[in-house]
Image (tube, rainbow, N blue to C red; front, side, top):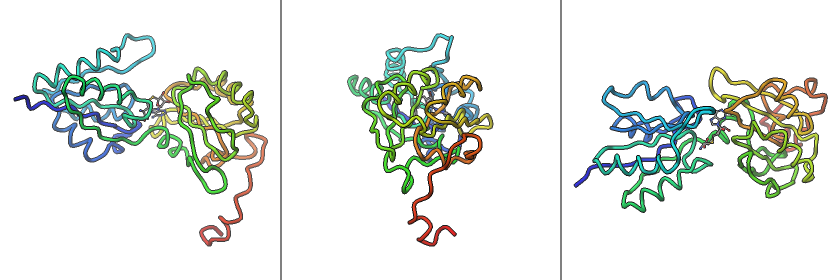
Length: 259
Ligand code: SAH
C-alpha cells in the first residue's frame, strides 16, 4: 500500500514565520514540494538536498505550469508513494485555486490534508497598519480580484474592499467603482511586497490613486485596500492627501482605552 500523502499548505504572504506549525511540520517531512512564486520562499532553502522542489509559480513573461499540470503532478507523485506538500502563498482557499487541486486529487482517490494559511488579504494591509474592520470605520470586507465585476461590492461607506491581483487593472477598477456610486474621496492604500524588506505603501483617494500608482510604478505583488480603514495606515497624513481623516467615533474615546 502506498504511504503517499498530499497536503495543501497555506504558507502565508511571504515572511517565513507566518506559516503555521502544522504547515512547517509537513514541509519538514516532505519528499516533494510543489511551490508557488509567492509565499514563504525562504523555507525552500531549508529543505534537504534529496527533496524534489517543483516550481509552478506564475511569473510574468515566463512559461509556468498550467493548473491541469499542477493537478496531475500532485496525483502522480502521491501515487509513487511520496509525501507531497503543495506550498501555496497565503491561504489555499482564498483566490488560490486550492479547491480545484483538492477536487482533482479526490476525484483520483487521493485524500488531501488542507492546512490553512494567513491570507495576504488581511496580513498585507496589517503590515501597513490597516485593519480590515474597525469600529466606526468598517463593519465588514469583501475580497476580490482586480479582474472581477465590481457591482457585487457593497456601497456602504463602512465596508472595506480588498483587491488582490489588481495592479494592472487599477485604472479601470477605480473608474468603475466611482461609476457604481463609491465616493471619489474614499481612501485607498496599495501595499507592495507586504511584510518584506521591499514593502512600499502608496496612499491616496479613489479619484487619484491610479495616477499616483502609475507615477510610482507600483508593481505586483500588491494588495489594494479601498475604504475608510486606510486612514489608519501608519503613513496616512492629511497633508499628503489634502483631505481630512474622519473623526474617531466618540465611543473610542469614552471607553478608557484612548486618552
Ligand atoms: N491565496 C493567496 C492569494 C493568491 S493571489 C492568499 O491568500 O494570500 C496572489 C495575490 O496575492 C497577489 O497578486 C497579490 O495581490 C497578493 N499577495 C500575495 N502575497 C503578497 C505580498 N507579500 N504583498 C503584497 N501582495 C501579496
